[in-house]
Amino acid sequence: MPSSWRLSDSENFCLSLTLHKSPEEVMEIYGADLNSARLMHAKDIPDAPPLGTVICAGQLGEWSFCIEFEDFIGSTSKVMRDLSHKTESIILFRTAKALKSFQYVTDGRIVEQFEPGFPSSVHGESSHAFAEQVHVLTAASTRPIAASLEVIARYTGHELTTEQLHGPLLTTVIDEPDRVALRYPDPPLQYPEVPQRSSRRTGRPLGRLP
Image (cartoon, rainbow, N blue to C red; front, side):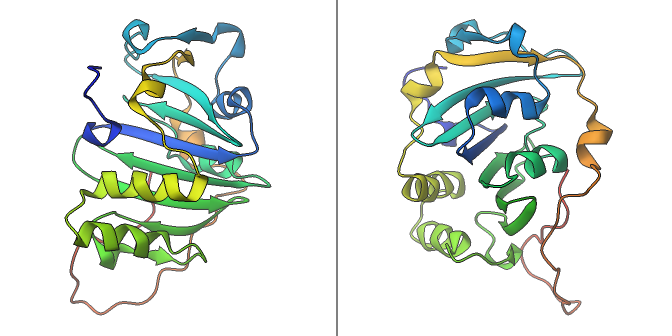
């Protein structure tokens, strides 16, 4: 992770931010064993195991964040449901196949969901109008992930900087998460109503995400 690197440069990551939960609470929601968690700098973080993931967590004021770069689970239904229990969370991810998603979740329900850079992908609506803010920036030639991170920083009052991502951050490996249980929790994560659309579509519509 060179000093000039920014999170918006990453081709594969998942970032969650959760209000009024500690980094340790967030890691437990991901399924981590806190006894194995250690403060680590980015250069010392191990590779993810073949079936697992590495999570790194830290604090931004009243918000806690958790970041993954390989085979992430932060965008799964169970993690989003439990992170947002009695509070609010924002999940932003980009996959190696260039799929991008911004999700705003409150108390187990996705309130607003969209793919940055594709205005037609918006599902749901929040009073914060995250999608509108992001699309204003992308229309002015800001890259979608950079625009999303800027909007998140405005909302939380804290920018997640490269220096913070260099660490040290509380870090641990989750060897073999139960991905089926993470995708299909009971009770389920609630999704916005999907409006009926005509057969003629533009952009990349977002449905239910893994």
